[in-house]
Length: 108
Image (tube, rainbow, N blue to C red; front, side, top):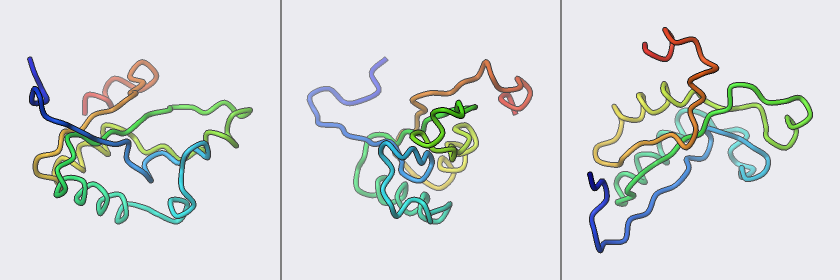
């Protein structure tokens, strides 16, 4: 199954705001929330991005919390919300730690 068109440049991005690791988050993201995340997703959708990605970390080890940050939106809930707010962009999770989540919540 081919998801992206052959012979055509396709591009996407990891969404800002959704995960605020200090390794890559920009300063403006610290004060950002749902409105900013939605604005970025809709702009990327409108501009022809092929995909938008989120990431998941269920637990951040205390020794890595300063570098990784502790804000990580739930990937399933975030992607479901963005699916209703975008028109054509594909949505994916780089990481979804299903084994560490309660199966009924994941299925929901």
